[in-house]
Amino acid sequence: MSPHLISPSLLSCDFLKIGEEVKMLNESKADWLHLDVMDGSFVPNISFGLPIISAVKKISRMPLDVHLMIVNPEKYISDFRNAGADHITVHYEACTHLHRTLHQIKETGTLAGVALNPHTPVEVLFDVLEDVDLVIMMSVNPGFGGQKFIYRSLDKIKRLRKEIIERNLNTLIEVDGGVGLQNAEAILSAGAQVLVAGNAVFNTPDPSKTIHQFKMIEIGNFV
Image 1 (tube, rainbow, N blue to C red):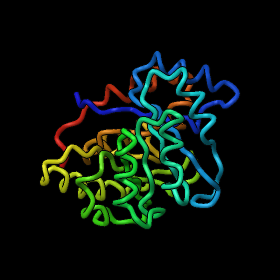
Image 2: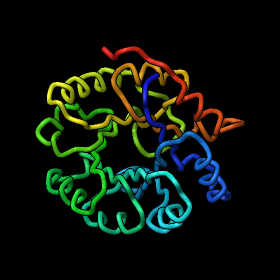
Image 3: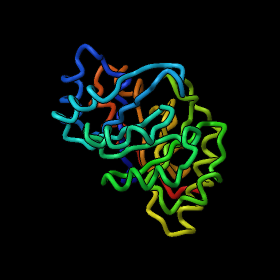
Image 4: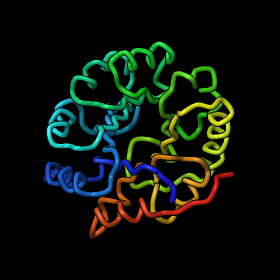
């Protein structure tokens, strides 16, 4: 069985019961807790920010996997770390000085991630790949939950995984957008190790059971 990780996206939870939702996830087989921070500028939506992350940190037993979909993310790295982020991922498309920002994240003691939009080729990361702890491959256009998975993303995952292996790196590939039980096996087989699931978890009668189903997916060797 593949030791893949599940990172449920809090963006799809019931915000009136956010504390209860986090406690439910604590008791599930979820590995990380994914938090999408949107500013209404880099993406056409506004979600939540530092106060929510601080509140969630107080009760979460899982590492907080914070995904910054914002412009000028370098201005807020320390703030998100202080709020409780265990991983901080910035978008390649939002960073003029990506190498500098990655090291800024690492200096706070968090894992440093880079997210790529669907139109961005993976090759843009090759010059900084040694500095990246995780790559979030966006398999939908960022900004809203519930979108359909873009299957061309599978080829990008394969190309990135091949490069990581050839360099003998430990960089994780995380896939975010349209992930469900119907395509998780294909995503993992392509070389991903972390699945972000929002609607696929929270819009089911038993989210904890659904997370367990994600964890039970078996795959062969990726190609």
